[in-house]
Image (tube, rainbow, N blue to C red; front, side, top):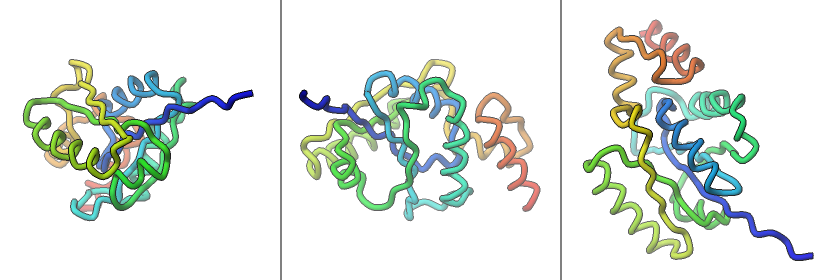
Length: 168
């Protein structure tokens, strides 16, 4: 009997922190592929609010009750995304586009990933209209300035933000 080929995609990001917009894209992408790897990047080029291990925990807890979670793996990665995609035998990289300003950067990254790993496609998904304005940076800014992020992030992230900001 022939073995079924698994169509696997990667949704990479720093996820500092994961937002409901990210979760919306994860849900939608999980229906397009047999398996979705949510790849939390260490990302040495950024200065994240939350440590790598915390971001992994937030993502895992945010997804643990979702009905589609059996098709999703949350892993950490470091290094080139194209190399990671080849190592995991992914056929696609999922990227979210909220606005035209996102497109220029994402387009350049997609072209570089194609140069490094020709067999891996980049698929751009638009967030649901209710999340177009939402980003991790905006969430952190709202929280730092005393705003309520309820409904913008999973409850585990809200608790993490509250705790982190009390420590400062």
